[in-house]
Length: 361
Image (cartoon, one colour):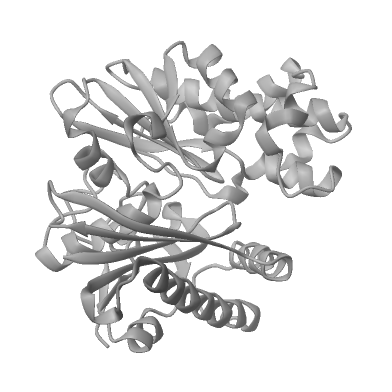
């Protein structure tokens, strides 16, 4: 069927909307993609909502978060309408929407995760069934609730030589490793662009380090980098996940703009290298998706620190910007078919789990 997938990631830069044709198994055909950026005011409010949610003991009503959720849902309605218009399709052509929402807090250590976004309102806006709340069941069962993309990565990578790994660089980084026997292992490796973006916004009067140009002009402070990598989380074996707010730019305060950017970029790359060391088989290649693949300095640091070939997934004919949104469309169809989206090797769930909540129009 035709399915729409929607993703608002930890980079907080906007909504990715993808239309694919899939059976939720081996058939995947990308049809259309649209990226809708957030305006600065909403990006600030979204960050405030995330900060507020991380102070709470559990998800619940909070006026700021409720207001941001309503605005977020309306922006997703606009993104779907735009995607349909660009693709030449109408709502009646689409079988389901996979609606990730936006993660305002991720606390698997407390058995909860919180993605805001009104699935019922989105279903009502288009008359299309919506599958949302894709992480909560996994976390409630004792899993990490992340990453969820491995099942989609496995479908895309069916023809690649194994062992292989797909690395997603958003605000947080996560890796999917597919062994020579086809076994899936997946986990968050740490930060990707999140801290770099925070640094540039706080000190560089820029939303992000475009192309990694600022970091390329700096020098890595190895002592500060070592201190950041000493966090015990990096020694924890996978599967594991982490919230974007788990680390801050405090560790590099006092450095120049360029040196701070270089050190935080090295932190992201070195964390991936630590993650690769956890794998039982070293991948032949690290195929990179997400916005971080446009950061040339980060890509070079990944190659140097991981010791494996590093290539953007676009070289495989995949759209590295659309992959996450496509994945949630794929998972929505799997939900309708009763197929699992998370596994013991990807989230630590006790058994393969279907996940998601269906909202009918």
